[in-house]
Amino acid sequence: MHFRKEYMQQQLATRKGACSQCGFCCNLLFTCPMLAKKNECIVYGRCRPRACKAFPIDQRDIDEVKLSNATCGFYFQSKLVIDNDSTEN
Ligand code: SF4
Ligand code: SF4
Image (cartoon, rainbow, N blue to C red; front, top):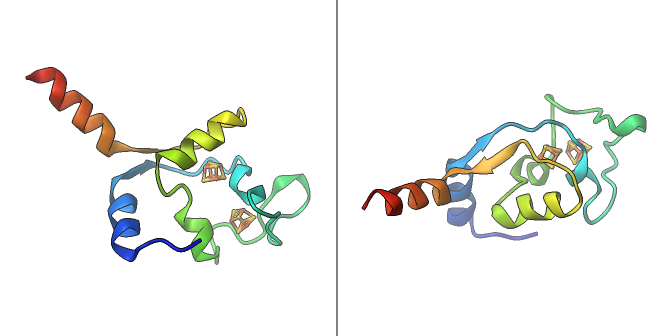
């Protein structure tokens, strides 16, 4: 996974919410080696990999979680702000 640094910074600046530790993104392309039994992360809050902290990067990631009937605790604020602005005019 390689994203432009500017894009990443922009996306992380608009990301709100918090990880609910549902474990969905721990099993995306492969099962993360930090994932222990019962879907518990053995490094959470201490030294998670950068790629782990970066998820979700954009709305597509949130949508992918939803398609699997899971719920990510994060959301992106930018689209909500644009939608609200357009209804006020
Ligand atoms: S490091 Fe991240 S991806 Fe890996 S088990 Fe922990 S929370 Fe999941
Ligand atoms: S899908 Fe979202 S809530 Fe679930 S573990 Fe990943 S970042 Fe956390």
